[in-house]
Length: 223
Image (tube, rainbow, N blue to C red; front, side):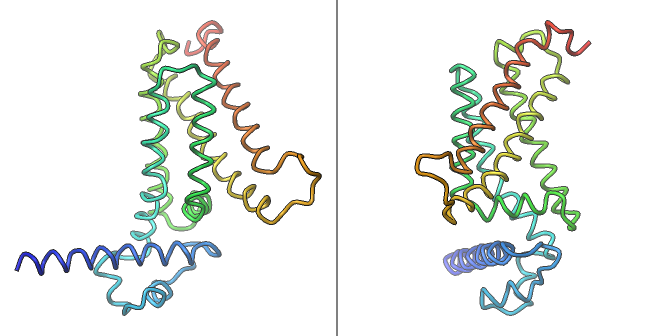
């Protein structure tokens, strides 16, 4: 009995993941608010009623996609911020991690970029919640660094939100840039590609924030 229950649970999980994957593929060209569950179940090859064994509606499926898209990025960036190397090395590795994530999960990044201000409220709230949790984790890592000595919690949180916003904006920009480069820009050999420009600008922006961080208390920040 327990074996058959385990087999059914595995099959249920496979069907759930298939629904998520199918929806993600369909969302490459449309928004979640325009996607119907019948379209999704048709791709998977299950009856529309089977959808409700896994999600109560398309909004709940969208929330699950948000968790897939952003969950792993939290862990990677937090690990880099916890390292004791210099600021520039951490910035370079963080941007590289974001670029790698975009290359490996372009559909997830496109989904988040489109739905962050989209028409499905539950999904917007889920993205905002993940961003908020991301900022909390980054703030905790920043607070532990010596350069944050004497900073109040509100200022550390503000700094974390700046970093998170830049990383998410960079991910969205990289998505378009990678597509442009993939289409084959007809620039001269050795010229800077679109993705390289995004990476260069992102590093400079994060370094500017880092420089400002070092001088914040000297300029009366937080008073």
